[in-house]
Image 1 (tube, rainbow, N blue to C red):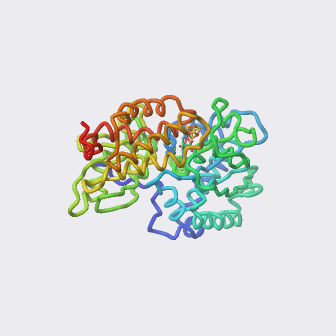
Image 2 (cartoon, rainbow, N blue to C red):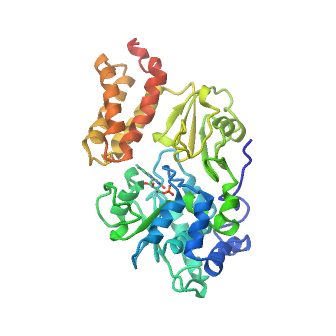
Length: 416
Ligand SMILES: Cc1cc2nc3c(=O)[nH]c(=O)nc-3n(C[C@H](O)[C@H](O)[C@H](O)COP(=O)(O)O)c2cc1C
Ligand code: SF4
């Protein structure tokens, strides 16, 4: 059984981590000191590579590899971006990090920036997270007073400025190239890759973009070493993950567990099982863009593995019980993607709109034979022909719903 291993949540509920003194007293900023005075950027990146840490923002790409490519770029100007956009519905783990341990995030940002040679970092925060932006502003001030950032950090040769950038709330602006566009003052839409931001990123300079949760692992790895980190979690996917347990369960909560924990264990042990009078129907893993899983899939392990049947995504686990109307769910998913499609490419702009129209007709009991014929085509186009992954995301839950709950969706029409 996956024990709660605490790397990111170790201070949660124990100390007032918004207070820098309390954070320092609990061992905070020791990793920064170790990096500054005992390590080099090259040995820092080596530890991250050994740890096999991969991105917690969804794609699961190797953090060490990305860091190394920015480090190797020859440029006097480089940037680091902490992605705290977190617009995926049902996902609020990064917000909890700021509420519970803002200095852990700052320490991770400072070390990561120095490793890749950036002397300017941005924290791109969801525009609705005003309270968290304020917490971070205060934390930055305190860290500067202590000499942990600014010119000549702790009298070393390293310097770093951190700026908070508040987004306008578009889901697509969590995608790294759209995020970069929006900081530059352009329209928030994705750019073609290559070139990757690690080569040509913010203001045309090499840029490392990492999710807030990913970054919070860095101080632990620097202090304890990559080998120790690689022992946590599963063989394929080391480390821990924040899971958001939500829906028809007893304990709605955010828990940190080793990767490789099964969905059943998440729901039954850590979520306390189904809430009183509720019966499991399905669960959605990874927010609105995540797959739907049935009872038979509950023993699937959640880990970052290209071959995994159920992608971890953002780590949100929404448990749905039998009283929920599948038509409402279809409408909610499709409304979201229709609204959030940035409109840059036709397959997504049109496809998300058509799916939403069909979901509306299904809810009104007016779904037609023609709709049933076109659904596979629309899903194929979204899955295969869109400019960025948002189009693909829009098709995932709809596809699983049609596959598994066709009868319920067509109930009123008596089409089978
Ligand atoms: C539509 C879309 C939305 C995304 N939203 C987020 C987000 O809110 N936060 C995030 O960290 N990554 C998000 N990503 C992934 C980022 O593009 C990027 O891969 C990630 O920030 C890299 O950090 P990581 O390697 O630490 O995961 C999104 C991607 C897409 C396609
Ligand atoms: S897939 Fe959607 S979000 Fe992505 S570029 Fe095309 S229209 Fe924009």
